[in-house]
Image 1: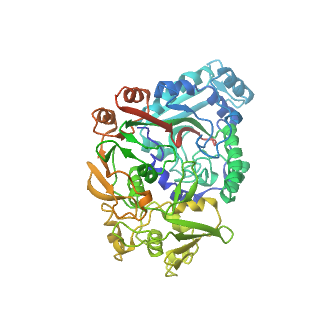
Image 2: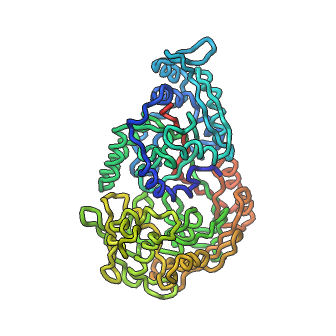
Image 3: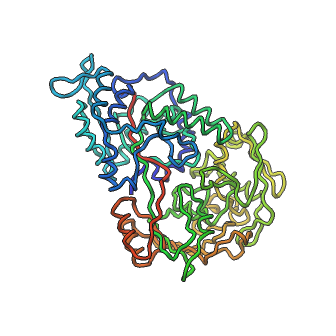
Length: 554
C-alpha cells in the first residue's frame, strides 16, 4: 500500500499540526526565493520533463487506476476547477528546455545547465523506499531531466527519514531540493495548515516548500472566513488554478480505490465521501446475514475522540452517532440525531437533539452526553488527536489555564439543546462535530483512565453494537436491537471484520471468506478481481494525491 504523509492516519492529525505550525510560522520577509526552485519557470520545466502518464502506466498499469494530477484538490470536490482551466503539463522536453532558457539556465559543454553566476542546475531528491512509486517516479525523472540539462541526485532512505529532513526541521534548515509523498484530504477544501499554506511553514508543519505568495494566502484566508458553498467554491477554484500555475508543490497523480464485492451483496454504495453508517444501513444480503469484510489492522482505539486510524474510525462511525456527517457530495450536513442553527455572526452552533435518541443500553442520549464527550478533549490528561476541536471554543484558554471551572463557550440550554461558541467565525468549524457522542453514564468515572477503559468495548447509539473482538484477528459488530430509529436500522444481522494481509485479500474473496475488501489499487489486482466468478469491482477516485514538493528557497 502507498505510504502517505498522513497514511490516512495523519489526515486526522492535521488540525493539531495546524495549531503547532501557526505558533511557529515565520515571517515571509525572512526568506527569499532561491535561484533554482524559487523560479516557477524552473518548476514548470521539471514538470514538463516528467512523463507522469507513463509513470501511471508503469506503476499502476492503467489510467483506470490513477490519473495525472492537476490541482491540490480532489477532482471529486465541489471546489475543483474546470479541467479546461488547468495545465496538465503534458510531457514536452522542448517546452521544458525553452523555459529553462528563459529562466537564464544555459547548457554547458558537459551537458548540464548553469546560470550567469556559474551555479549548476543540480537538485537533490529525497526518495523513500518503503513504497515502490517514489523510486519509479524519481528514476524516470533522472533520465528525462538529464536530457534537458538538469543534474538530478537521488538520495534513497526510509519514509521517516524523509519526513525528518523535510517537515521536522526549522524553516531555513530543511535539507532537500525535492521530496515526494502522498497526502490525504478532508471533505472540506480548506487548505489551511497544509502543504500550500505559508502558516504551516515551520518545524513540524506540513509546508516544507517555503513558498510564499500574498495572493495565495489571501485566497486561503477568504475561503476560511466566507460562508456559503457557492461563494467558497469560487474562491477555491481560483486558488487551485493559481497553484496549478505556480506549482510550489506539484500533484503527481490521483489514485482510485478498488473494491472486490461479492455478488450476494446489494446496496453497498461505496464512494469518495461514503458515510459508513449509511453504507451499512443500505446493505442487503443473499444467504448468510453477516457481512464479511477484510481489513489489515486496527489500533484498538474504538473511541471517537481518540481514534487516529481510518479503520478504527470506521468502527466508531457504526457504533456511535455524531451530530454532523459528510454527505455523498462532500458537504457537512446534520445527521439523524440532531439539527443545528448558526448565529452570533456565525460563531455559535446551537444543536437540538431529536426526540427519542437512545444509546444501545436504552438510556437516552442527552446534551449531558454531548457536553461530556466534547469537553473530555479538554481534560488535562487527554493525549488524542482532537485538541483543535475544543481549543478554538471561547473559554477554552481559561479552562486549560485553570482559571475557570468550565468552558464558557459550551452551554447546555436544556436536555436536548446545547450551544458551542467559537472564538472566530469559520465555515471549517462545522468539521469539529463529526465525532460520535459517548454515554456519560458509562464512560464517566471521574478519571481519564476509566474513560479509556472502554476503548475495546465501546457503547454508543449507532445502528451496530460492538459484540466481540480478538486483537489482530477479528471484530464482530451486531445489529443494535434497541436502535432508536427503526426506519434507519440496518437490514442485516451484523458485520464480521477479519484481519487479512493486503496480499491475501483477493484470495479470500475468491474462496468466499470475504464479501468485500479493498486491496492495493493496481492493474494486477483489478484484473484478478475481475476474473473471480461471483465477484464484481467497485471503483472510485480516492480523496487524496501523491505530490512532488519543491524547496523554493533553493
